[in-house]
Image 1: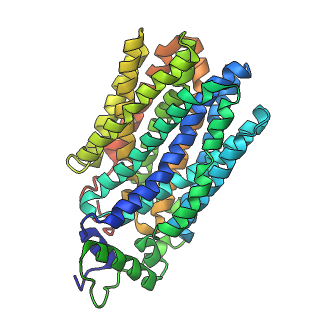
Image 2: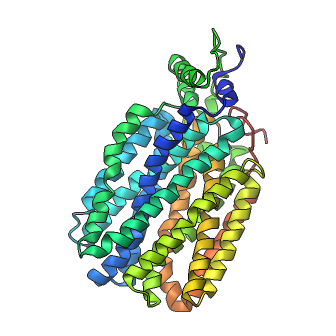
Image 3: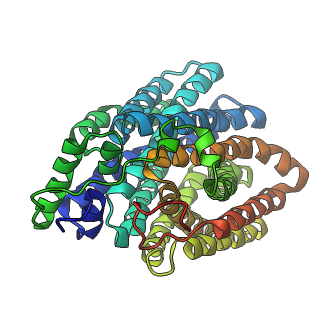
Length: 446
């Protein structure tokens, strides 16, 4: 291994305790993110009763966080390509954790909207950076699986949100405030992240910080029981065309098609996912279920996310990123149609569980594939802009639910979601397949 670059040395390692620690630490932050996003769906249903809010106001409470997420994702990736993955990950955890705690003190709709925007900004910047960091450390043969496992922590966070929604929010008129107070935990966790997560070796090399990069690689080699070489091979110098990191770089040459494909995937899956899951508790209440029952049913539906991630993690290194993503998106579209047709409690639960299973399995594949599309110098930027563009759909989708319900009921709402899953399938089929390949390979070579 004396002539191997640092990136190649990382790719050849087995799965080590340090890899496990990386996934768990990043995943805990990811779960807290999901808990915060999930909480708003239960808070909306509660405030609809307590504050007697109309559908339009509820839609803005659901959507304003995604306005912040769109801005945060777009800027966060670019900052991570300049300052580092670990720095941005910790800083964004702090921002949205503090903002979530502040939301517990909201005194009206306007203040809640302001805090929700700040929460979304921090959250949007964090997610693509965390997946990029894990992707850059994962050995090539299991890189997709590791990122899907990271994404699986989203289900853990959403389940926590469902538990809080089912057992904390209904306790009193201030239950939703206690829910937000619990969501402030990431502010405390940000310090753990800064101390415990290593910085990306590929990022350090791209900035000329070779000694730091070598020290990180040697830590991972020591954890694996692999001897480190006496001298490290030098990686190729970063291409100067990517020296100025920005949106324009993502639309140069062959990267343009990848960017277009990714943006289609992110837009379609965001519209369908957030349109459905932000509104499910409120829609169940509108169908005549009590607030407590609607929260309990949402918890059951949410539990189906875990096996969805597990199957996706298994298939992504067997089938590959593209077929796994397309298959789960097709399953999501079918489940959305079933939910539109459901006319009983059992049918709603079955269709909801299928939607949860396939949709979150698709999300795992999306997060695994996204960082692989771009070279190191624009990887976080590319992932951030894809996520940011997708957040435009997550802003629009909750606002579309009330008029769609008025026009055609549940059939119109979930039929529209199925159509947007179809848009995501088209994007997935246009992506390159990166299963088993090294991130160091030229992104323009496929």
